[in-house]
Length: 227
Image (cartoon, rainbow, N blue to C red; front, side):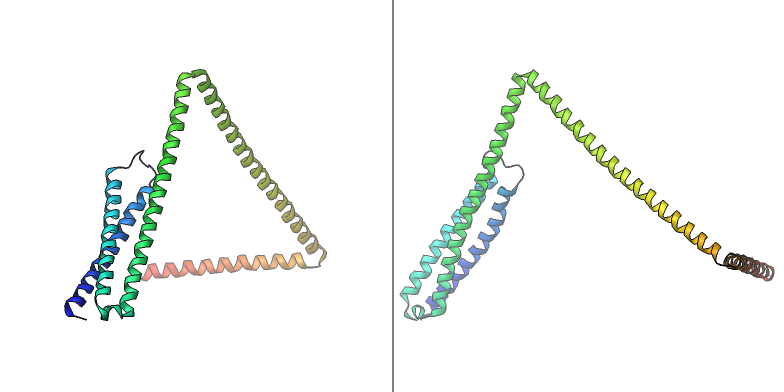
């Protein structure tokens, strides 16, 4: 393999890889035209320019692949290199995938534009019908208002039902707690000396509280005195 042939192969492959990277970047830009919420009725300048750039790059890549193939066939050393053959096959596969991707994106944009145009035409027809039939438009408006009122009533009924259910649940809980309290009081009255013991415990707690409070007050007075 001559040096010039090897250099030419490397330069052509570098150009091919660079154009593949540019294609990916243009695909990212081109895909936005299908996902936008407001698709224009006709392709705008940016869309046409991006699509034209994609087609031009794909054509240039096809030309580069043809040059690589001719260079590979012209040199026996290159022809016998499995790596070079695989590189050329890979460039062809990527080009084919990118052509399919361009076709898919173009189809998505067309479908999105057709849907937007259809919705726009339907809205225009409805507006034209309402303009030519004011009585029907007023009746439709009243029906829409009635539906909104019915929906509001349904929502209010649902909220009230939930409130009643919560209130009923609170009532059941109050009855349960009252029943438990009555049982505790009844059990305490049946055990001799239990009420007296509970009273002494309560009195001791109050006494301990008074002592602790007095001690804290005394400490505060001592601190204020020696400050």
